[in-house]
Length: 568
Image (cartoon, rainbow, N blue to C red):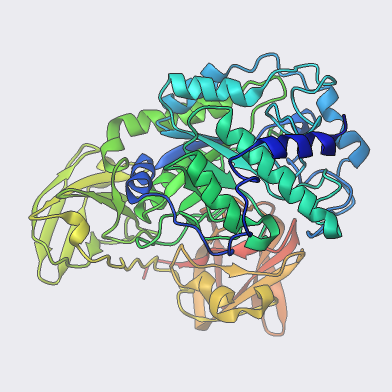
């Protein structure tokens, strides 16, 4: 029996999604999850994302490292794994050390409150026992032959850990996908698989689509989503199936502060989603601060690991997750069940609130003096330093002053609890001004390239504004670029700081230069940058300085470019 005979037989027998009959629903019809379900999901704040499959045998990226045609999407660079090799990796994939209970235990020890697993990525391989295809982990040609999804579902249910399925609507392996009139057959196949995932594995709390920008009609989402909600009442669905559904999904970046719509940042612990030997891993500080910036913006963090080919999560990744869990064991009351704000996140740090309490997470203190926060409309009744040490706190009609001796400041985040005379969430969110004392702040700047010429959003001035939520960005495919700043008059520079998004790390070679007459002189040469890069330099006096990027893996993007002056 071939694949499409199987599909037609199964779809005829199913009653949940594809046989829900009638005319196709309008592409905007979705009632959304019940408010109480969304609130429960939001209170969890921290989840484990897992990208895994036969591709782990190559150490390359899942889906995107597959050669061949990608109908409806950008083609590869020509360096991908040949399709005839990639599509047969499953015949060698034998993760004999996979232990679902161990994965769940790792998630819980990390302080994570839910788990989302890739049942099918863009490459089309199924990590579950789908009756609609032979391209799956339970295929007769698979040496492993066991359903990964059912093992994870059982482990999550036993440990009372909410379970989510990631499912990619795009499928570059399927011959019918975006293939003219045959795409309708693919939609039936896709709907049938989703029905399997929502009927064969017990309670499913989350369905995480990854539609690569597809429209609702591409997936018949107007009919699909209501059927999903009938099969799994209370399920949380993300916004990547052509409809807004329940929450937004900023990827590999911290989302902006937003209280009026739920959101969840998905981000990798290393650089790849799938496992890569020796991949650059985020530091303990980066991991915890990322979580706090996300929660402080009123979002959730879905943090990804890529298990190895044998089924184990890399020891160093496990240790990093445990470090996050240890931190949360001490300070988690200010993370779980909180809302973001009222002090909006930024370079200074972040804040959360719950009941009558506000939690401050100070990550960067001013160079001089205390941290100054705007006044709020509720009276602060007490202030306490949770991370230990001495706290100097003052409140007046003009604002709030917070200071902690240098020796008592925590390198990750100095945690302060404020109590107010009322409900903290009722305090209107406010911005926190943070000045770095950079000589380049607000100065005239130019750049060789701006992403899609969107100067108001990604122009070079965004790298000189002391705002960690804005950035200078360049076009995709850009490998060389420069950013220039005019200080207005000659100034002495003794330190240079560059903040490149850690999830990108695209700069591979660069120069720091100053204009001497008509020519640019190089006073520093470097390789990679990354987040919070800083170096002292031999004093240079000039009016115009430049970051000259000589080599980048893709379009460079910079949060901040700062020039430190000598003490005056």
